[in-house]
Image 1 (tube, rainbow, N blue to C red):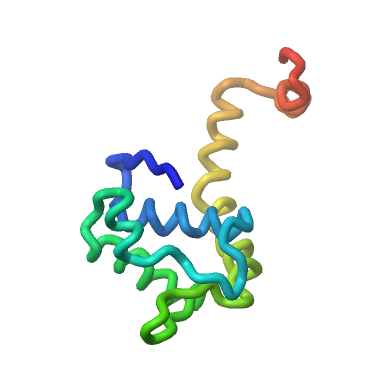
Image 2 (cartoon, one colour; image 1 turned 120 degrees about the vertical axis):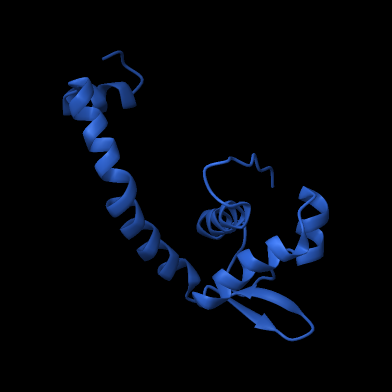
Length: 121
C-alpha cells in the first residue's frame, strides 16, 4: 500500500480513504482483518494515534468491527454501505466541481466520450 500524503486534508482522513479504497477494490474482503495499527504506523512512519483515529472513524461508521485482542475486521455489509456513501459523497462534493470545469472548458459530451475511448477530441 503506497500513499502520498497531501496537505489538503488530515493524514488520518487520507489513510481512512485509502483503507476504504482497498475495501471497495476487494484488497480487503468482508470478514478479513485490516492491517494492525502498529503495522501501518511502522510502514508509513505515522503516529499510532493517527492510525487509530482512522480506524475509529471506520468503526464509528460500522464499516469495521473491533474484535477484542484480535484487531479490526471488515464487516460483512461494509462494501454495500461504502458504495452507497462514496457515491453520495461523489455526487455532492466532486461531481458539481467536474460539471463546472466541463462547462468552463466548453467541452461537449461527445468530446468526453471520444477521449475516453482513446480518440482525440
